[in-house]
Length: 335
Ligand SMILES: Nc1nc2c(c(=O)[nH]1)N[C@H]1C(S)=C(S)[C@@H](COP(=O)(O)O)O[C@H]1N2
Ligand SMILES: [Mo]
Image 1 (tube, rainbow, N blue to C red):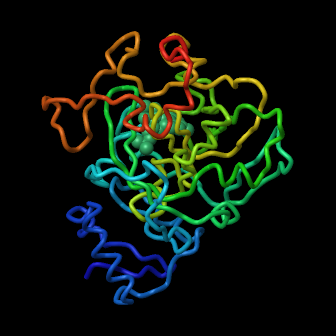
Image 2 (cartoon, rainbow, N blue to C red):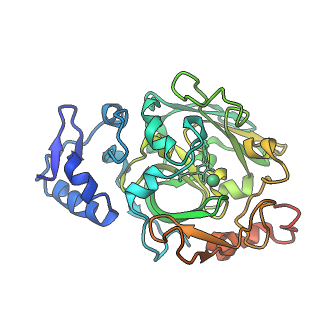
Image 3 (cartoon, helix red, strand yellow):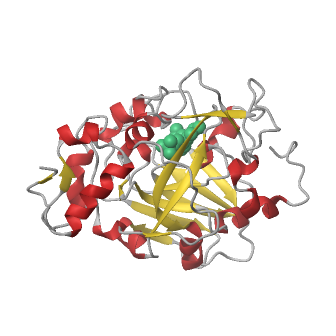
């Protein structure tokens, strides 16, 4: 049996299946079963997935949500021919410093994150400030699936099928004022559920920001899911940003506030080490990190530790789509 219907209306693969079937390809069979009704049709409400998301276990998957059913994106550049990273790798090797600084820490610790109820507050230079509940956010635009490369500043990369919609759809909804030039993303900092908030690694909350035109670029994704399912906590549930042409740290996880400003916001990594992490942080193989090269990268799950690395591409391979945003800028100075 592939699918077990939980009392709370949640469908998910049983544990023994998960280990073998953690790959994206495998999921398709499961979805087919669900579509034919063989698995029991009831889709979970947002709240009812809590029980599962909070159970510790590295590759336990949160499951599907009707609101997340997505069509492949038609946005230019939103799909790559590259092979998606296995779910198991993408969900157990990442950064979410609120849960620890080791790559395995977020998957091991983020089960304490409480993702429901959740609101995102819209602040600053907009016509329509206020709070948006997660359900409102989910309904704001049509969900798309996008296969994006994401490259960490540390030199590893992944290819993940995200589910969400262009952040631009939310921005247009709240109507920025003429003097809004930047968009700041403030993420959750809850010392009760996030064991490392309070450590001195970073100045909490984790804050990131984009120039308004970067935020409006159709590739900038407000993501609610990955691999056709709700985001697992360690990947930034219930809502995060994905900015594929910038280093991973620009993509804030578990966002609680979006603020429109006229001044360039101070961002967490820039405050921590301004000489290492600039405001733009576009993936640029020609600008080394002061302590290491950025010319190549290791694809998680595919290349072994000693395998030949891949060449890192300018703007992480999205130059055709986003290069224009930086016309005339000295990207060595404004790194
Ligand atoms: N709130 C928050 N968001 C965050 C981080 C973090 O520590 N806290 N780490 C960033 C970094 S450095 C990377 S590489 C990506 C990793 O995200 P992933 O789960 O998509 O791999 O999340 C980014 N977003
Ligand atoms: Mo990163």
